[in-house]
Amino acid sequence: MPGENTTTQHTLVLGGTRSGKSAYAEHLLPAEQPVRYLATARTDPTDAEWSARIDAHRARRPPRWRTLEAEEPAAVLLALDEQPILLDDLATWLTGEMDDAHAWDGGGAELARLAGRTDELVDAVRRCGCRLVLVSAEVGLGVVPATRSGRLFRDELGALNTRLARVCDEVLLLVAGIPLRLR
Image 1 (cartoon, rainbow, N blue to C red):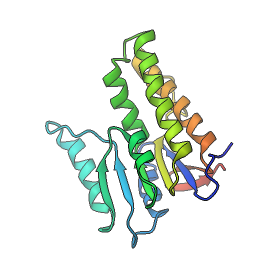
Image 2: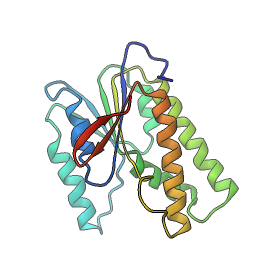
Image 3: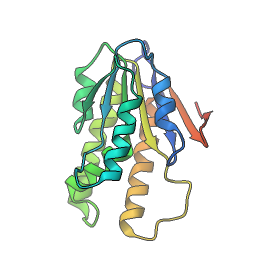
Image 4: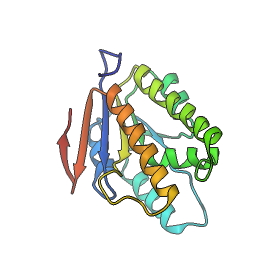
């Protein structure tokens, strides 16, 4: 079921590693107009490779786009209501949330905290009044991870993607750089 906003379009762009999902999502929004780019990647000054990935994403963005580092994307989505928004990437956001909740090896209380945070995000997407493009990894097409934490992440991200797909008007899957329209 699409989101409750009938005047805006919410798009979920899914894809695997290096599938081209972020670049494709960026092209769904006008380069010549202001866009709010909500970046969820947490920087780590000790990880040069991660920093290079973040820098490559930044360099690709049009000059009129404003980047907001968004550890609290739900609050930002509800506060912005005019310019289009691109939120990249939900897998990275979920990783940070799992770290914060100590959910990797935790049980009920940690997973309940994580569930509350994902509930907030899904509700904010549903209520967001602007053009919104979300980017997330699709991790459910590969082998079952060998570790509990890997399986937990795959399951939590799969559940989040499913919930977001229900409240988005359009869902795309990128495979080898080619977009497939799921809805």
